[in-house]
Image (cartoon, rainbow over all chains, first blue to last red; front, side):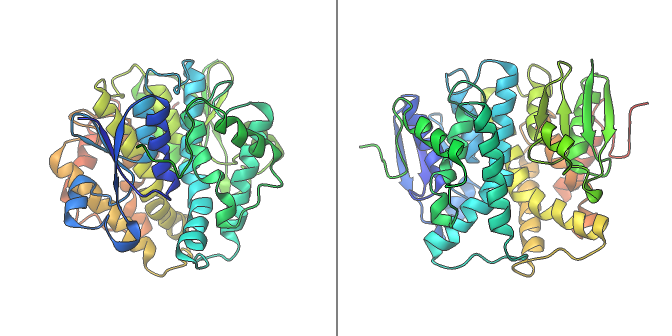
Length: 203
Length: 203
């Protein structure tokens, strides 16, 4: 058996294991799951992933793994996508948790509502999504002013995690114009060997 | 130099590196930082952690590491707190990202507002915090019905990550009464060697 990803093509979180598997030279199959029509909430799906989300990775031995950033760490272990130095590795993890806690809930959620649902995102505190999303982009810009990639001198899974929704931030209503280091880094990521974008699928 | 943690005693995220360092037998110093009075937003603090959050770990070599779960992974590498088996390790990461994305934003945020601020949490969709927090607890209860600890048979950093706010879920208005496997697991965590709770500080 090979790797399988239960995914939605337009999801940045689902792009992460696609690009990592491709850059690492692994073949894989895609199973399309439409979160908009409740396909992650069926009994059969919840038996595979009780948290009811995509992506879900099925390993060659048949076992399942949820959480896109956990997939990246698992796939990268012992490969050039994982920093060798212990501190650089810790920084990769730091930026991956930053992505899920301080970036995705604003930038990806705004994109979900505006781009996929065609509605304004519900907000408890008006303006908070814009403020916190821009705060995350500013923190990224500061890091990238000092380092070519998030975990140091080399491209790693931390860059994959943060590229996912940053490169489509405009679809959530965020401009990257104030963040020149972020824009230059997007180009560096896209220039890495065997890079594939969000629309790509294996044959 | 030893480890230093910039922390707030009452924060579950800050408890994570305290208990891990203690269980691993490392000495460390605590520097109290009051998030309620803006101490994470000063120029001096932002120079150490541009994302302006606690905890912040200073390593013995003087370098800084943010994100509580990244600290746990870094500290646990090569110790019994990190599963040896590659799949169990991937599950530990899976549950740690689950904690930061599907658990903390509801259970810890509710506790922050109700317990620390003494106010009801602002909500874009009324009832969403209660619904999503309980969904996270139900997913945990399902896992713990099948396994004594989150990453398998042994206590790991995934248990530390999820214990942090689960054991004070009542302070956020969540009852653990419907989750017997979660309640039994809290006791298993508390019975691990050199376990210390949220109020503990080194001499």
